[in-house]
Length: 119
Image 1 (tube, rainbow, N blue to C red):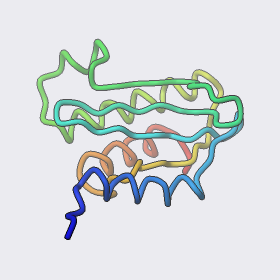
Image 2: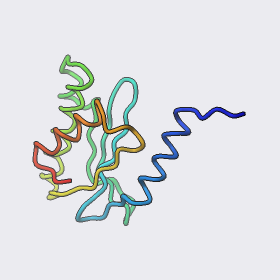
Image 3: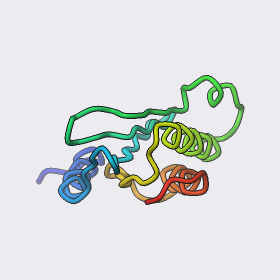
Image 4: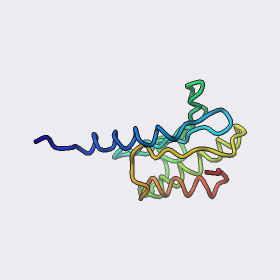
């Protein structure tokens, strides 16, 4: 009997999400990656296969702030929203990348919404 690992489960959920969520130039896909140390987010145009805008907890202003990981995710969400509006993007399609909409992923999404992104 084989056991299902966390990684296998997340990849299965990720494939299920990606069947539905796809980004284009007008409304790119907001993809979240969460590691143990940081959180990374990028806006991806799936038609051309290019990353339009990216932000992460390793960025200069965010990595200097001494806050917990949930507050760090809020800062990243605000940062990606500001960069997106500067690039002329107002609406996105949210891709939680197989992670539960909970904790850091949820705080990033809510901060991006508050900063002006529509999804």
